[in-house]
Length: 339
Image 1 (cartoon, rainbow, N blue to C red):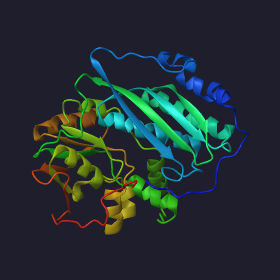
Image 2: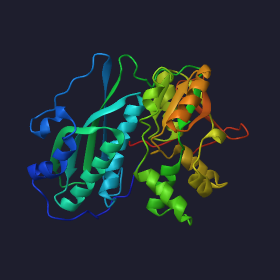
Image 3: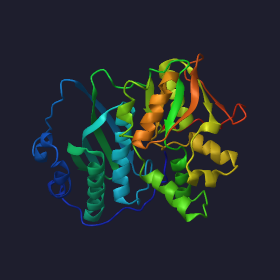
């Protein structure tokens, strides 16, 4: 998602590279022996013989993925969680991550302290540790990148391309909160309800990667990805890779109470929820006979799972969006595209 550029930057006395590592990043690696205390040029770790390593990399740039004056703890959480969401979509359990920070010299110690604290909180929550990385300066915007490693049973990684005509389409959690939250942050969407406003902004800044459910989809889901570009666009990506089409039943798309209160009967806001992106929910397909197992898994993990459509024979990547009466919806856009 695109956020507005701003001249605002956190200020404070900058630390040297090794001072930053010692004070803020070395403690984050203390729980991972393969990091070797961040004293070497690379990390060293093995993979159990019955497991495979899943690797993902995501970057975030100030003014594009977050507001430069967002709280550094929120920035850290979103950076790590978006990568954890990719691991969850592959059915992988979080293992370790590396971090690259590209920071203007105006970004000082207060910002680094908040950023490292945010990483530390999420490391404890999601059971992952820092394994290494790099820290450099720039005259441009804050740029951050994480490479996350996960473990999955050998041969068990859930692909995007495994969906088959007849499979049901499912999504976790709720859709559209972050898209609405972004408009609130921009100042283009007025929300009088402070509680709803807070929920939507939090979902934008701190998504909930489905790390408990994702690994349990191994052997159940035929195809999976996470919703980052928008529900409609990402279902199209899954269909493209799976060589089929889909119908999305918009009346079944789960909305939070906060989103529902803001959308009301406004079709423009509803379309925004379907296409806005930044949800980081899991969008997956499964055979009809998997429904009881998925219901039990949802109850066990506490992660809502909702059936929202079906894969069809048809042109690869084609997604038809139907309203509650079965009529085809005409959406002005399908989702986010950086280029």
